[in-house]
Image 1: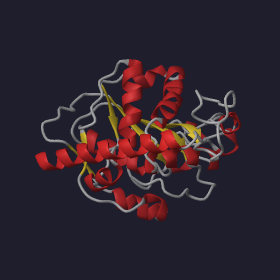
Image 2: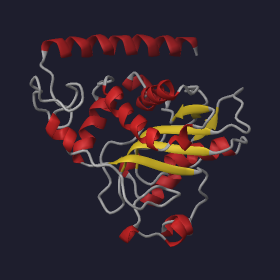
Image 3: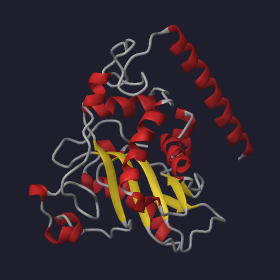
Image 4: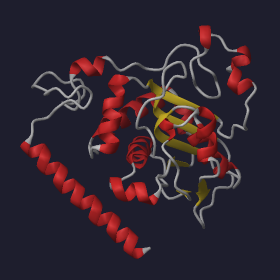
Length: 269
């Protein structure tokens, strides 16, 4: 275990050195469209270009009060969508919310953040989460902010957990305890984006557990992730927490992939 943590630290430091060297040599480009960001043409502190910043679409209108997806025709029977009114599997989270709609523009930021070592995008994406929570402060009345965990093999390849970086932004902004080690991903899971809806359920079933020694009984938890399609990853994390006596478990993600659109690529953990 000690050797593993040492390798994690060395890998993270090595990646940061390479990324900073590349950022010094090459001009700043927008992670959304890849264009050079000129002075005065930035929508978020020169992190993204103004044009891409304006294309961000927020989840609004009538939503299902459970899963947070927009209701067809702006109406849900009993405030729940059909899937939540008559779920095929048990829903463990109190409710799930997404700040933005996952679209081509936002996918550029998230892919750069997760797969291209652009850790600094945690500030931009974290601000999106914080802006949502400022409008919905009831979700901040929790005992801990917990990121969806990565399997150690993926952490080793990436050098960091993007959900943990986002969680740190939220925890700091609202002065909530950050507990990145509360949940563990106990087994490797296949990329969710490449699976059917039913396969996603099976893929994440029982994939998470509470770390030994963690006290969760009666605690309210805010789970943080970057993208959610079916909500099953958040649901499986919530199941692990609820089975150990947790109170309310809220889920918040930067982006929701709407069911009427094709599933996005590369959103797996």
